[in-house]
Length: 55
Image 1 (tube, rainbow, N blue to C red):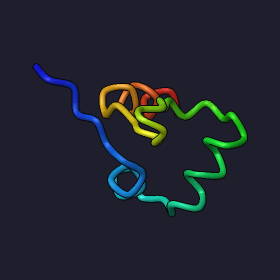
Image 2 (cartoon, rainbow, N blue to C red; image 1 turned 90 degrees about the vertical axis):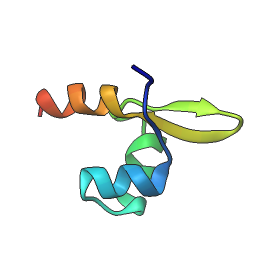
Image 3 (tube, one colour; image 1 turned 180 degrees about the vertical axis):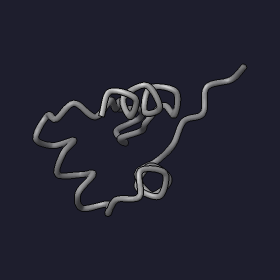
Image 4 (spheres, rainbow, N blue to C red; image 1 turned 60 degrees about the vertical axis):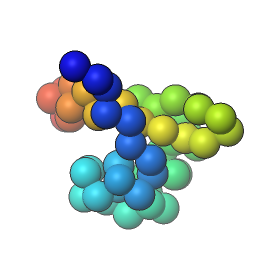
């Protein structure tokens, strides 16, 4: 199964949060799993699902 890679817009929709909240938490080094890919911040859906299970 291929990994689903989401951009900031898709991730904000998935988490039901604002892009500003998401950017702020990524920049502050909060525990939201993210990666840099070609200079852009991306999120793996499977990692987000696992992260949400801990919340």
